[in-house]
Length: 242
Ligand code: ZN
Image 1: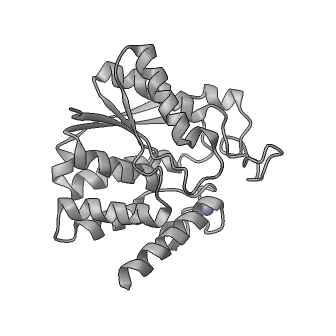
Image 2: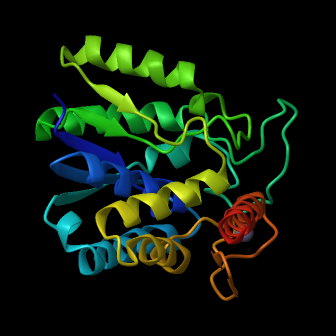
Image 3: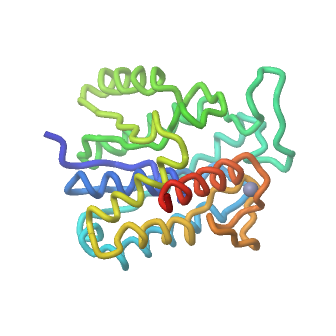
């Protein structure tokens, strides 16, 4: 029986939905993020804002929400040239992958998360990877997650479960999931409150843009992350009003 979880929590829409999912399911939940010299510290600020707002608006979840961990992973910036850590434009590489791809990133995240979960006595690792709105990132594949679960469980001699609640759903369904999780907890507007919290406080935009507020939140509106978020939000809203 699983009762404790560690959520890979970046402060974006997906990982915030994963955090709500874990809080709805487990008794004790901790969060972890990695600082690897992201061009924009906005993401790291967003996660603190989301944690604060979650605690304030959802007291039942606040009671389960434990320690937050931020691990320095600057070494990742040393070994990879990527538009997320350097000042270059987002583009496609010859490999067919966008240059936002950081080779080995999720593998390192999961390895460090498992080491932390081991020390903290946490059984489940929850991550927002997804094959549906797939940028072709090979380290987001379901098979990669299953292989990591096996490797980490064997290598640490501790049975870890890697849970990926967003693996097979698109962005519209991710908005829907967050709405339903909020509603489950508080049928008097909890769904709307959680969606509003995600719109207002999470950060997804690759360019770190927060000066423009759209119906779906802040962002440049034209990078791939903003486009996905905006499109998903519109589909979620359209489905809701029919
Ligand atoms: Zn953007």
